Amino acid sequence: MLKSFLILAALLLPINGIAQVLDFQIVSAGKSITYRSTTFQRELENRNGFSAAEKTVLLMETPSFQDIRYLRQQEILRSFGTEAEHLQIVSINSCTTEEDAGGYHTSLEEAGRLNPLQEFRATLLSLNGLVLYQSLGPLSKEKIRGIIQKARNSN
Image (cartoon, rainbow, N blue to C red):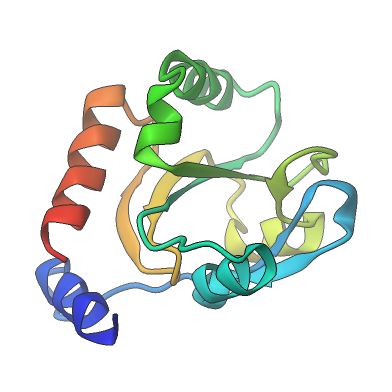
């Protein structure tokens, strides 16, 4: 497992040679359980008793749940239908002005720490917090599929 992670990190290193890892707190629906992005896979496996190795996180950072880019990214995510289950995409909302009541999300404080400029960002992450791809606009279905496939093929 560690070998696969290191190989993936080496393949995805930016030009400056440093892989970016995002370490932040994730809150579950109902605020009953919190996770760390860097240990999300292990925590999900321990709590749920199944392998989470193939899952990919789509972190959607937004200044508002009414932001047109956020709404577009949500629309794209919904358009996957049952394919999202096959791709095993875990979506996390991070809004700097409103806290999400359902699904995985960050607190307002954590959202502000992650995104002090309050811009829209869509980021694909491994379940260990490794940034696979980041965009200041919504990610297309094709881009999401391609990045997930590339990450899985490098294992």
